[in-house]
Length: 214
Image (tube, rainbow, N blue to C red; front, side, top):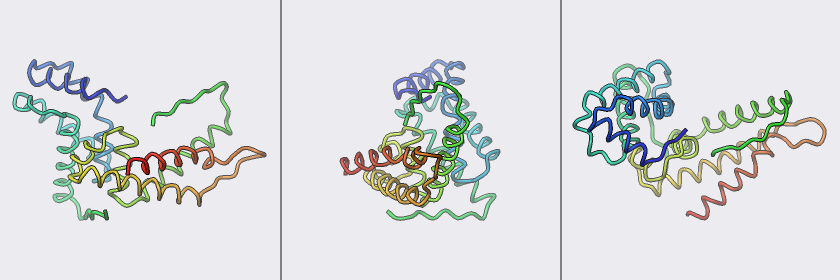
């Protein structure tokens, strides 16, 4: 669950100024998973990503008295994790990162339906595969904005690009996803719509939204 910027900053202040261990634990449990996912995007190793994120939190706790002036702790942690990930790649891997060009869901469930559950799982598989096939930067922008709920400005700071570039990359990502999904229509029994058809309105809504912002 994403906590508000105000709550994040409040927790951060309690950690840095009051040495509040409970606030630190709450901050850790709130941001740990998304930071690990972000780290995995770079290094492709879950265990190493977990170690990197844990080390970042440990260093933050050890240096807490020098970090009280940070205005956006979540963005700060993303940037630190990114830098540590890049350092890890330089030290342990031959991987080369190349920069490419420039929702919360509500479900009403009455009874368990194996067929619908299968459709849901297949939909998530198709979407995840489609998202992973995007150019690296577009994929990362899409996940940070649409999955982690970060603002354009926050993503821009994390990736060291402009908010306008974030917006452009997001629009291109959504446009490519709509094309990819169009080639993966999944047939279902009788008169039920395909899984992709069920998702299509969301794609169209996102496209409309991005066009409105541009």
